[in-house]
Image (cartoon, rainbow, N blue to C red; front, top):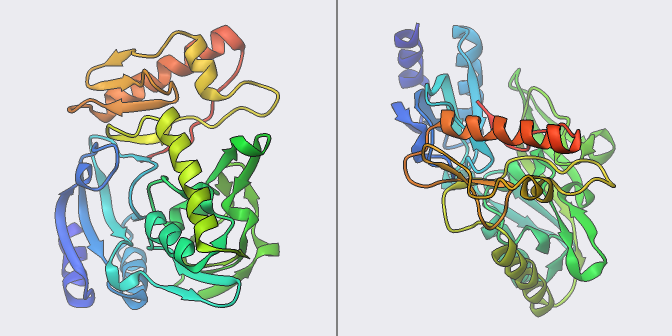
Length: 307
């Protein structure tokens, strides 16, 4: 079957195609076995053809961006993995206070653009890895420590999304049609192509300074020096303590399984010390869940995606 799929890919896809591609090369965890077929579409038509081939050949399809919130199993991924990071897919369109961004634009690129344009609102994304599409799908957010703990999230600033459905049709979804939740967006059988944001006009210096405040706080409190997938667990609903605090109070910082280590700086980070497997990480996840459940009676929910 895969041979048949490969032939269809060769005949129809213009972008880069790799076979048995190690996923550890494409995730921030630096963990993961091989993908059967890795495709980097050069345009929306390429993406549509990948979806069509997946349906016609009845093989799995996985869409990914920068792989920053992802743990890929050591066995790898079957079928077609579509990576949306091609430079030809990355564009930003600026209006007055509205800005449209394709999903492939990295958050670093986006925040730098907003800073130069003097568009405020999304400074909390400074220092976050990943892409705009990933940030929208996970409704990425952060607490503003200088403003009495106010919580900001991407969904607060979205006006509409342009998506490709898994039947290949392109649709535009208004904010009223979007169901954002804590670290989530209920959007099934769609690929985000573009997001439109409404931001506030201010001076580039103000945006730059606010971005630097968020970045400084992240560097002080989060584990950014080693391969990881960011926070492993979502925070429980208020008034419970944050997940990192719960894990810390279980005295789990520094706990190691194989090459995976619970960060000594931020207990909600698991880092790859160099040779971690997905099994190592999942073993630590189970240890954390069990200890927190026993000590606090709280079931932690994963923030990362395991595939």
